[in-house]
Length: 249
Image (cartoon, rainbow, N blue to C red; front, side):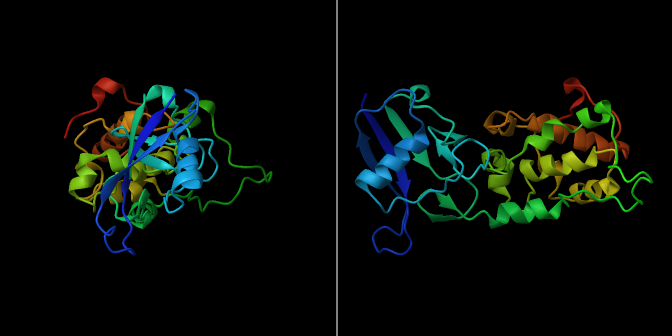
């Protein structure tokens, strides 16, 4: 089949291309099961070597090739041509500064990530037998879903609240905080709740639900945000809420 790609281009180093513009490329002999990332490689290698985009593992694990494909945040390495049709539009994810073509500056995103203390904190002595700190399957299940985050930024850059206010920590940072807040072995959960209770924390979420379908790892992002909100209100982290308990703010 023949597929036309419409790609958002931008190169601040070249006069005339230092403002965003659209460019089309046509590829022939495309298989329905080809991935968008493979097609971008073909464009770069066969038609225009200046096309810039990030990619690494090509297996949906590193999250580096997040981009907006036909109006949705996706990983280019996971989307098949047959899911999109003969015309495919590709542009950078929204809400972050564009450096070149499909490459955005991820530093604001990672600054919010660092803000929520995304690491395990436990200053108690290790168990006397020298083994790791054990945890029941029930306790692990409380945060198992949020351990799947690959920091691709698909959820955060699909969020209108983040588009409107870049100071909002965003869904991905809250997901990362959730993973440690609900870990029964962690001792800094209250510190993270205090951080997320600030004006640009979790209450900036308007429960629009863009984040959950944007996640390539199928994390229930909005649910995790709702659990953090309830933990802040209740001042505790035990228990798992039902979807019907998530309140809108």
